[in-house]
Amino acid sequence: MRLAGAESVLLDNAHTPWTVWGTAKSERFAGGGRMTVHAGGGNDKINTGNHDDYVHGGPGRDRATTWGGEDTCANIEVLASDDSCEFRE
Ligand SMILES: [Ca+2]
Image 1 (cartoon, rainbow, N blue to C red):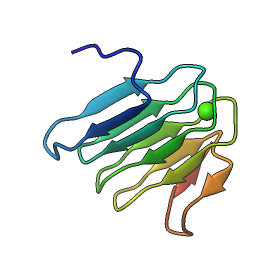
Image 2 (image 1 turned 30 degrees about the vertical axis):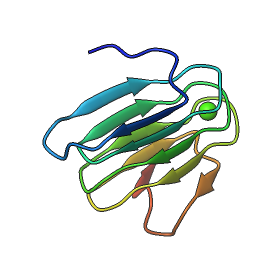
Image 3 (image 1 turned 120 degrees about the vertical axis):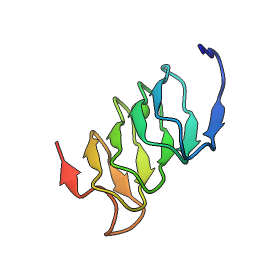
């Protein structure tokens, strides 16, 4: 499935792995399944579930909240909690 032009995406299916590519705009991504997020430009907000997720914020001031799993984050400027992003690139 390809979705383009959304500013907020909720991928609330814990059994489906998702790969999301953002745009230059500020967007919000939230998911329950294993997530790979390339947020792109803009000041993005990313919220993942209890899997081993990968989050790349891209340019901008990006905020990540990751729950459970062993999560890897890159180019994230703000972590919602000390538990977020076990690995940082
Ligand atoms: Ca960004």
